[in-house]
Length: 432
Ligand SMILES: O=C(O)C1=C[C@@H](OP(=O)(O)O)[C@@H](O)[C@H](O)C1
Ligand SMILES: C=C(OP(=O)(O)O)C(=O)O
Image (tube, rainbow, N blue to C red; front, side, top):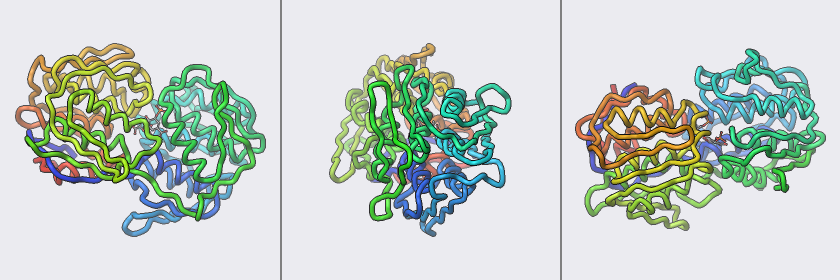
């Protein structure tokens, strides 16, 4: 599907979808346990991949008709050997979390994914599994999926780089809790995307599993059981998804009007930094934490400098904001953003470039030179990547003429109703 967006003004109230990161963890945590209800889950292409993995391991996941909750019957600690290959499709989180889980099986588990996922790095996680006494192999010997894991990994002590993906740490902690020996995870390099491990620690705590922060990293004792208090767990709203709605308000709210985003209760999500970033760029933004509402109106945006070490998923949003601002927006510490569904650093440089933005790309830094030219509508490639699609759609709101985003259906990965939400705010768009 291609979506063509017209230069539009926005106003009104909308709700962010539930968090993808919390939903993945809650489904798998419930999978490791007995029976649990996950309230307000994100039901999207990526989280469905995690649901299928839990089922492949011998659990079951029933979706309420209106998707307000999931009833999960877990596989009870150790996963069974699946009847078939586990296809994680486009979801890095599923692949990493399920790889460590599959390594607990008394047999072998084969994992694969789409072209994008089969190009993403898994080597450090496979080595860690082998160091913990399990089996972890890449069929092509290149550290990428397809993967073969298994061997009833007993656990132990392991060291792993922290600057490729925090999902390796999340995966080892979640699986380590049900091993015989537990897992002590030592970081070889500084941890990037650290707030995602905070999310893990929070969810595990809510499921009664304790994680310890050590001087060198993290540790989890073995022999623990997953069970949320009262048998239920509720997922908070997603700040990465919110960032597009807030950016739309900051660049395109009608004069004197605002955009209000609901579902913004505080949590461990690093991407809530979007509120401060918008503020530092000159948008009028306020966050009522108790009500869980963020209100934003248009401002004369100016460039800023943002370190995205902790918040990689905000890079496409910030690049779009930079293209609508005056002066330079410098996005630093972004090399790890190249290992996502696509290389998002060069994807945003090239696609915003097609719209007339002036952008300088370096290995670890992206600079958007705002205000040098007006953005103009163009045909842009969503790169089969939900975040690139949504960020370019927001840029389309302030471009002269029409912007066509190709491959717009990929929003189903994290924000299936994204375009409906934009329409409800007054955006004029056409689906083809
Ligand atoms: O654990 C998670 O839920 C995620 C961790 C981050 O990845 P990395 O840790 O690979 O940077 C983030 O980019 C991804 O969208 C979700
Ligand atoms: C990188 C992302 O997710 P994953 O790693 O799960 O594919 C994302 O949602 O931006």
